[in-house]
Image (cartoon, rainbow, N blue to C red):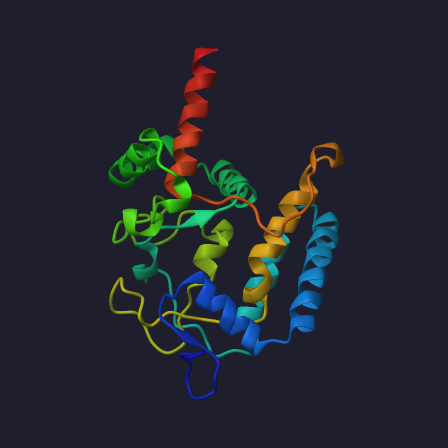
Length: 242
């Protein structure tokens, strides 16, 4: 397998397919280390959430922020550098709930977000209304080069503290990005990237009442932010009619 790395074998260049990143991480980290990290992070996030009286997901985010700022080259990403914010962003139900909580805490008007994002929301809505198999749709290509719904006019993220894993996995160590092609983005730096999605899926699974839990399969459904906004808007319309 050809691995695109720097001279230290640390990074993958640019935006790569999820499977390619997975293979890179499996090549870099031993299987037992990946499993141990996954199990430790699930329990750590739960335990720390109880102590801090917050959500397990927020505790996982704090941990991820910490490891990205310790033991790796300094991040070149900065406020207003928004090239990586012009692509499709997906997240799980748990991540979306965290975004809604952030919006509530910070007084973010989601109706305004929906209005400003009509161009991409309509594209996603057309696909949904057409009844197409969502697994066969290239969602990222559908909204590529369009700003994330939560990107403000200053090029900053409105819900930065609760941004999804999709966003946290695109970082830059070598230099400031110069285009939306994300050729400067690197991933595969820390072991948390190998287990992040599974940790979140497990936290979401365990948050359900035991009577509603099914066998854990290691993943949870994901949707584009535009899709979540459509569902949110539909829910609000339903409330106004009742």
